[in-house]
Image (cartoon, rainbow, N blue to C red; front, top):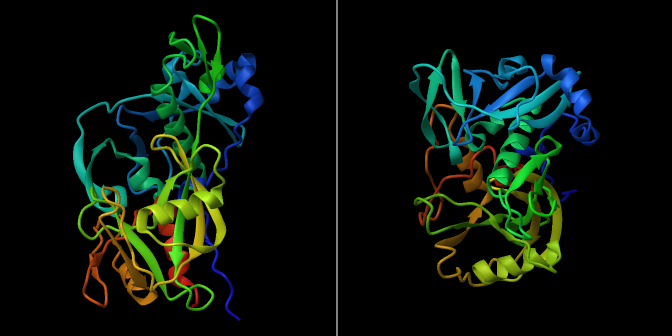
Amino acid sequence: MTTPFTLGALPTLSRSTVDRQESLRTNPERLAAKWPEARVVLLDDTGRTPVVEGGSSLATRKAVDFGTEPPADAVFLGEWEDIDYWSVPGRIEGDAETVRMAGSWGVVEEVPRVDGEVWVELRGYGDQLDDTSAGLFTTAQALRHWRRQSRFCTRDGSPTELIQFGWASRCEAKGHEEYPRTDPAVICLVHDTEGVNGSHVLLARQPVWPEGRYSVLAGFVEAGESLEGCVSREIREEVGIEVDDVRYLGSQPWPFPRSIMLGFTASADRSAPLVPADGEIEEALWVSRADLRAAFRNSGTLTKAPTPTPIADGTATLLLPGNSSIARVMLQAWAEAED
């Protein structure tokens, strides 16, 4: 008997092993005591961090290289196997050369390499990291974006200072405290009503995307709106159809700059006309499971760009979302499911 498909694998950026240890953020004595053995994750101005070339772990640094105690801009990420992990701003030292590696959407990009390390972005390299490194990089990126957007108090506009080792800010004027925000967004794989899991999936392309790049539909949750209500509204607004059987699949942090993607699936009538929202959706189309499987076979490697896959009816070529996105995990799970 065919069963409804599930994700099957944890989304790349949802993986983590580190204990965030919230109580330690207000225990400076404990953090200072463990600083000499701690490790530091570097993030440069563009959000890149070093990894050992060809490896799956972050190239962390010794904390003592940054002083005898945590510097003012250090952010505590958590503890794993009796080691504390921090993040601090960093930059490439030495003469860097350029190598080609996978970037966003799996498209091969040029990245800097120096002393056997490559400096990579989370979007392009997150799926290559082990669980510990993926969690550290994702958390560090999320806190970095939040700090860049929280330098002034939202109540009185006064400057803020970081407290709780990067997990809160306090304004200078009134002492108001604020905490990192996460904006919920839904992302939904819509399939048709043929069988339990459908035979076709609905994909769409934004106007700013290159020709051939498609993904599932997504949008931010509005104030006073349920997640399921957001799914129905976003699909209706973006492609003009109604969906049924809205079902939750899983979630993934997406710190670009501060979202959490809440994955759903739903079904819709494939005969209903698609009406792409002007200015938001350039094109929407139904893609068969066979065509999607072919696209995955041509989806590239770490150093080889994906090959655009023509779909059977000849109306489009297909490039899939990058490996670090929950959209790819959703599409992979659906492609491997039975109708």
